[in-house]
Image (tube, rainbow, N blue to C red; front, top):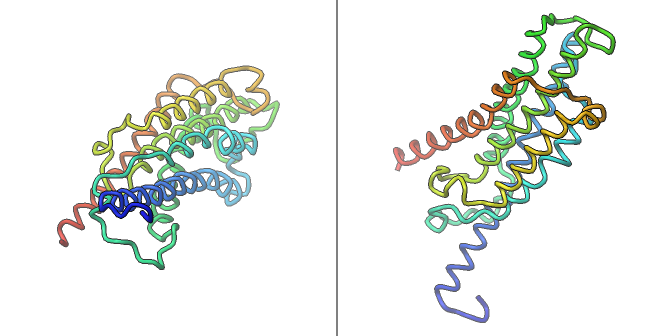
Length: 250
C-alpha cells in the first residue's frame, strides 16, 4: 500500500488482512472446541467418585492433541476469505482476537455438543456389555474389555467430532455451501490423515497395546460416523438462526 496507492491494491490489502484475522479466529475456535469433550470425561469420573470409570486415558488425549488435531488446525489458516468479508463494518480497535462470542461458540456450543456425543458412545458400549454404575472394570474383570472398547469409542468419537468442528469453523458468518465443502484441500488432507492415524491406533495390535485401545464393532463405528454431521449441522443451524435474526432486525 505504501508503494502503490492504487485503490484496488488498498482494497486487496484490507481484504487480505481481514482474511488473516478471520483465519486466526477459526484456528482458535477449532482448538478451543476440543477442550470441552476432553475435560468432561474427567469431570464425570471425578463427580461420580469413580462410580463411572474414566472415559478417556491420558495417552489417548495426547494422541488427539499431538496427532489428530494439528494438521486440520493448520489447514484452517489457509482458508479463503468468506463471502461478504468486505461488506462488514470495521471491527472496533479495542476488540481482541478472542471474544465472548468465540468462547460461547467453541466451549459452550461445539464443545458441549461434542462432549454429549462422545459420552453417549462411551455409555453405549458399556451398557451394551451389561455394565451398571459401580461395576468393576479393571484388568482381570469380566467388563475390562468392554471398558477398553468404551474408552476407544470416546477417543474415536472426539476425532470424528473434530471433523465436524473443522467444517463448522471454516465459516463464522456464511453457510458452508457458500464457500464449498471441498475447496480447502489442505483441510481434506488433514482429515484423511487423522482418520488413518485413528484407524491405526484402534486396529493395529502394537498400537492397541501402547494406547490402550480395542477394535470397534461396526455398530459403534456407525454411531460415531454420524458425529461430524451432527456437530457441523448444529452449528450450521446456529449460524442460520443468527443470520435470520440479523436480517429481521435490519
